[in-house]
Length: 486
Image 1 (cartoon, one colour):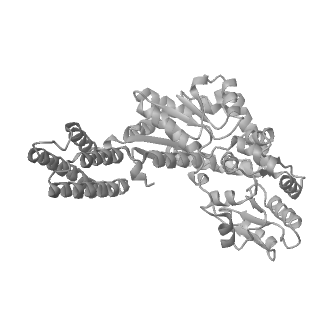
Image 2 (cartoon, rainbow, N blue to C red):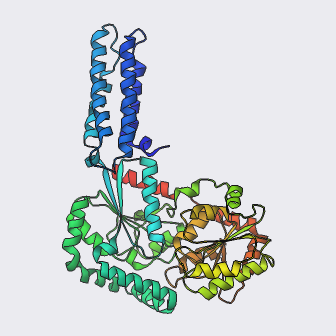
Image 3 (spheres, rainbow, N blue to C red):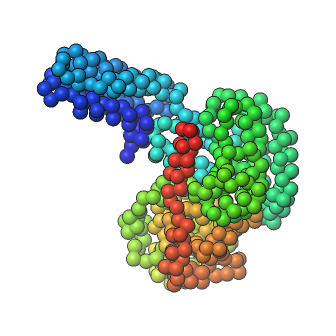
């Protein structure tokens, strides 16, 4: 179904036009009926094109043509009523409804509900969740909502954003123990995060207030916690009937910065995370367990055989997907060697797909190790990650919030190779607690874990399927719609 077909105004106009044609008397003027049918077709065609081009240009000729067409339909139905004295072919309330819809279309962009999602390019999970929610709103409600995703850290201060991002990436990559110290200290002493927000408050107040005034959102959503307190303070103080939702992107171990802000609702991925929020003092009525929003691609089936054939891989073999981390090239190389050794001298007992992403240094080194091996594919960046995950039988990856939830949505057991201290420990605990995969240590041979999962595959799948919820983004979209319509 196309997005314009999900838009409320489009559905209402289709319904009204259909009723008008249905109510046209059998002995009515055939030429007049044909003219109404032609006008109705033109209205729906132009409206479909106008809605689809809504975000491309302020001047929307197709939308205007559909508005003019409705005026034509109203005139024709009035004429039909005058000419057909026995039976009025149009119910008066339908004509009145068309006039209201015509007015709504004339002011469509200004009447759209506006949703602003504050996120950050810190890891993959925050933006992944933001984009999935935006996609789901468009899928369920067409163009009823205007959704904008903003890197809030970049908006606050590009220099601070660069320094923070560089610190995060380098500490996680080279000195994870230092990252854990910072994470734990800020988590235990909530005053640290609150103080940082308060110190920055006077410096960014006018900038953020101006930003909110320009955007005029009906709803604020956050998928990144660090500046939530600051954002909510400014947003709530300067906006009447302000609504603020946070979508928590990790499981079980929830950082205190998520609950500092004056948030109307927290959306969590599972009951375990809900319990964590309750333990932190969050009122139960403010917690909604709706799942982690994954891409809608996870709802669609991937033709596994065809997909593997396009990669020159053997559809008859089990497929291992390895997603290397940036935390150690030597470790990544060892993992590939271990998997290939277990897969036969030439890797001919399994398919191995390695996706290095934007890590240009890692890719050639792994290609060199895999050279001469059958059924091995090393890929750089791809926008088909859902297809790769759905095609795989086992995923070897880090304990990132988005990746773990995508594997659960696809029903794929995991071997976890690394965990960012503090931040990702809850995701690993979820896997361990519900037997969704295996948490590996640096000394382990990954191939042994893969072999164990292969031998107990159905058992792992049953465990994963109990938590799998690929519809979570759509459920979150419905919750947002209910919130904004009440």
